[in-house]
Amino acid sequence: MPFLLSNASDELKASVQAIEDRADECYKLLRLLKRPANEARWALLTAMALQLETIQERSGANSPRHKIRMVTLDRCTCGFKFIAEHGKPPSRLAGKFTWHGSLVEDANHALHVTDLYTHFLNVFPMWHKGHEEVDLQPDGRVRFYIPRDSPRQRQVIAFQQGYRPRGSEITYPYTGPPKPESPEAMKLLAELYQKARPDGSAKKFSYEPSRELIEALRSKYQDRLDQNFRHPDTFQLRGYTLGEFKSFYIALLILCSIHEYICYPFNKAGQPIPVSSLVMVKTRPAWAAKLSKISGLSKDLCATIIEDLLLDPVAQPGASMCIHPFVPLDGFALAVAPQFPLASAVDDNVLRSYSYMYPALFSAQNTEKEAVMRERIRDASPQFRVEHSIELPDKTTEIDALLSDEASSTVVFAELKWIRKPNRTLERIARDKDVEKGLSQLRLIQAYARKHPDFLMKRGKLPCSLKDYTNVHCLLVVWDHWFWIEPQNGIAIVHFDALIPELKKSTNLQSLVTDLLSYDWLPVEGKDFRVQYAAAAVNGAVHESSIFSPASENRAIL
Image (tube, rainbow, N blue to C red):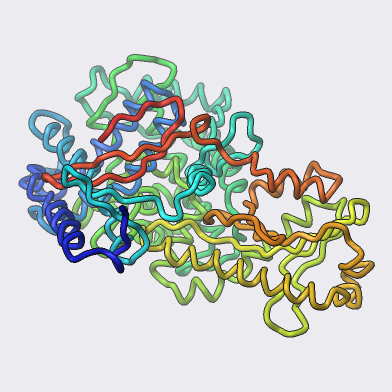
């Protein structure tokens, strides 16, 4: 029987703590810590990049297996923390990094251990905060259960992880087949490839992309960021705007895409991967100068942005390879594995990083989220009447959006919540409270509307009383993070990405709500995804937790 920390026996608490303590000492297994810190960091980052390249070679870019591994490696930063806290100082003698000999074994072993330890970091903090239940298995391992576990909650978790029903028109942000390069870009990449790539896989290479190649690639990444950025370019960060950051990141993506192509030409299957060259290494001034030249921003501004994107897992508990792609090898050199910036949800990541560093400044500016959602709802539904920001007369809350359709005699009260996806494990608790707050606000709206059915008519927001409508719905419309709420008493939860496509194509508001509340837009367990309780073992400590994977993939126990 599973227990929360608050109702667990002393014996169970002691058993769980013993397993956690043993896992925390897994760094003692790492032979990589005996090497200079700059060499160790380069080797660990290279091992990550090599895994992603190898999976891409076998399964294809953006295949389910490739996406899953990208997600897990993105948060597998504890190895860099171990190097910082328990490793040796950097050495100038280790400046020319090559992938060979015992370094290969040490790096792969370190990645394996830290990858397994990351599973422990994802669950034990939630147990200590009373958010996840555990049970001790007969063989001594501890099992962590899915919070609020139900068939629907599993569908919600799978949806958040990017799973969609087959044929769904709802896309997962920042994913999908990569946009092909233009013929001109492919020609210039092929020419550069012939000049840069050495024979064999052990040697490094050097190259200088032409201005023509950079410009041929610019529109692809400009379009990508323009489509995916959901906040205005005027949003102020640390001495620069989000628009300036976008220019910087376009330049970084151009460099990463060129390097990725040179390292792994997708049109030549079986070509050896030049492992020693997978990771891009430049000095801080060199990075700033190169990115300044491509972006048109000043070197000082580029240096400031680079500083904000440095990986520091000791000071940053929620460190992520996609959020912080620049890995300091020592006090001077920075390494980047191109796969992480290329897969990054850039807009979300920079704002998340900024919110961690400057929470007060971030909160002061981040006040227009619901306004963005309202504008998109209005643009998607010219066929319906849409009102917004209607304060209740009793001042308890306001109606974020009000949709009405006289033809189907339907009114929808919409409470809008754009809740940033948790990156740190413990952030889920605060994000869940935001969902619960939205639900409470919706209940206030519903209660007031039932007691005062004429107040919207008197304000000119509806042509008649709520009593005259056949269908009145209350929807909590969430974007990004959410959990399952069972539809009850006219209140239900839906995702913004499911609502917008329905608004664009529907001419009947009641039919639209009926379709949304069928939840056919959620993936189906056993068909679109599967859930298994898989074991992770490190340093003799073993725990089990849920793993979501494609339904067609029989994921092995870790």
